[in-house]
Image 1 (cartoon, one colour):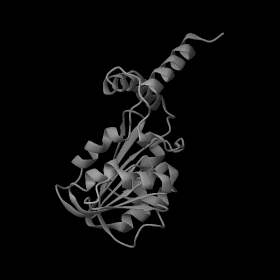
Image 2: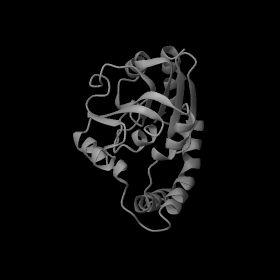
Image 3: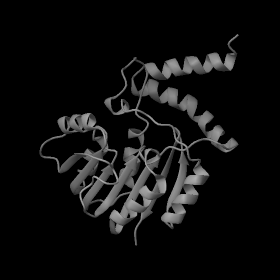
Image 4: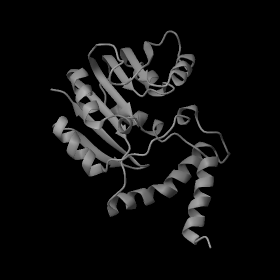
Length: 218
C-alpha cells in the first residue's frame, strides 16, 4: 500500500511538472547584484539558452558564453540580438574557451558536471586582477540541516511555480530542457575544496537546492 507521504510526494511532483519554473534563472538578478556596474569582459560557463549572458551584456563590453551542447548554443544565438556583444561558443568549458582573461566569470548549475577542483583553479587563472567569480551550484543533502532546508523548499517551490505560471499549466522553459546530473558533493565538501583553491570565497546554502559562491581575485 502506498503510504501517505509517498502519495503526497507523487502528487507534489505532478503539480510541479504542471507548473514548472527555472530555479537557476531565479538567481540571475542576485548574480548581477554581486557584479560591478560596468566591466569590460565576461565569461558565462554553461550558458544554455543565453539568458544570463544577455543580462551580462547589459553591463559588459564583450561576453563569451560557452556551452557543450551545440543545439542549445544554436538556440541561444537565435534568441540573441545581433547587436548584443555576446559570442556563443559550443565547446568544453575548460578547454574550448578562447585564451583570454575575464573581469567576470559566472557559472550556474554547471560546476557539478565538471571536475570541481580543476574547474575552480581554471576559473581563478582566467580572472583578471580584481575580477569576480560567481557560482550558483547544486549540493547533495547529507546532514539533518540539509534535509530540513530541502523540506522547507518544497512548499515554496510549488507556490512559486503556481504564481509564476498564474495558476495555469505550462510546458517547461527552454532553459530547463538540458539533461540534469545529480550533485555528488555535500555542501561541507564544497566549502572545504573551495577554500583550498579560492581563499576568502563566500559560500552560502540557498533555497531550491542551490548554493552560492562569490570570490574576488586580488
